[in-house]
Image 1: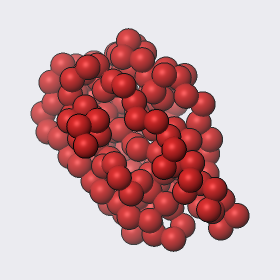
Image 2 (image 1 turned 120 degrees about the vertical axis):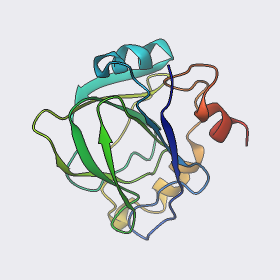
Image 3 (image 1 turned 90 degrees about the vertical axis):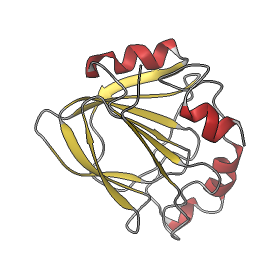
Image 4 (image 1 turned 135 degrees about the vertical axis):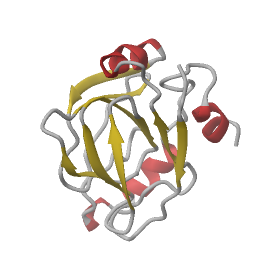
Length: 167
């Protein structure tokens, strides 16, 4: 496995989407030689409870789990971090690693866009949309999500180990 480019994004709480105050979003460009290997690779590295589909077209986040998304085919523009966040284009072979609380929304996509998603150790995940009733409990949940023990692409090494686990 290789990464053609590594992108890091830090997002602050925007009052609606909490994001993660401590951990960056990691985007590994061209990390997958074949998009269809994403789910198998994640599972091999103990990122489980996996699925294949798309990304919701509304702002949402998971307050109780970190998430890895591997682009299996196609491309999409995704907004990360809520309305005030960053728009990024992801393509087949890219991997996004979203710390708990990070907002994400598909803005547009090619007709064949498909991702694999997975969670450290098979954690269950919720879907939160940023309603005021969710606070302050989601802020506590986000802080209490345990760090993963492995990188979903590189296992015991890789950028996640460097930027999340070596803090």
